Length: 409
Ligand code: NVA
Image (cartoon, rainbow, N blue to C red; front, side):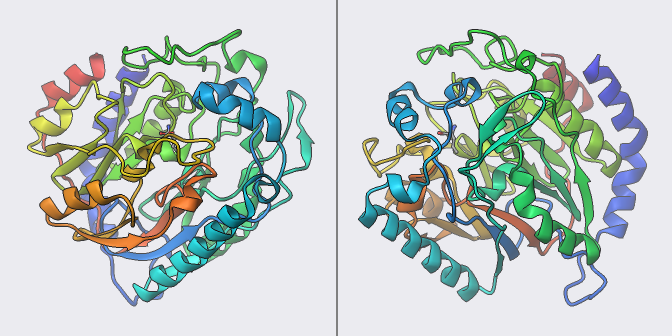
């Protein structure tokens, strides 16, 4: 039902609105009336970025929805330290290196002429209560998870972990400022997060080699939920990761919301029993290239191949598995940010992926960042690019029958 409705909405709007959007949306550097928020893809020249802050960041509570995303071998550590500030949990030298890397990253970005802004932390250790649940917070270190930037619009995602419900507060000052200067501001419907959003007694099969979908998810379709980091922007086409934090209804909400701009949202399913956020699984560094994780095949990878894109498999990470990744997998090697089509910000010790970039004509700007990985995110997670110089474009030409086949899957 969703797909049919989305398609008719899309057909209705897209033919004219894409033209219209292109006409209205030409980037004009130096034009003071231009929206301060402007990013249609992952690769146009970067001008401004939100960088998360480690201040007040807490070790997350291992609620069922967090268990569904995190590898079981990390549970004991997280349960022991839940709700404590990372500062008091992480070995002091490691924590200091994280702060040094964070400060140095700001200098690197500024040296590249990129404006850097930050969210405002709240006290994440405090327990909060809604009519349906109570939890303590996590952090505002990972703006990618919350802020979905599409063109001149900032979309506040719903967030799915109950512990992250109030993270939006950290972004209010920033968002209001962008809005006052002309950006569009949308907040996706705040979810109720009742128990019935999560399947009872859910347990992910960590050895599963099946493509992840609504049947294997912890989420029901009771209401739309999504994290912004489950979306990767490629101009007129956006790819969405069906995950433990973005259900089909959440992806459908984004699809229908963006249809009037002429944007198509395609849901992708991967082999990953605990999928959370697309940016350790599939990344598009420039038009024509998709980098994939060798451990997480994509059911719809043909969408890229049929459009003439090269699908390149990422090498295994260089930073070993036993590095203190307290929350995530080691695939943060793939979690990179483009300065433009030819330059990428990448962790300095991830040599394999740097070599891959070199092969495809992209120069690595090496950033020491691995100590920041420890609290759950890489360079892409810790940032949200709010302004890139470039226009909305179409990078995929598919025959309509092919699209319908994929959507009907
Ligand atoms: N599912 C991801 C989360 C990264 C932020 C992982 O590979 O751990």
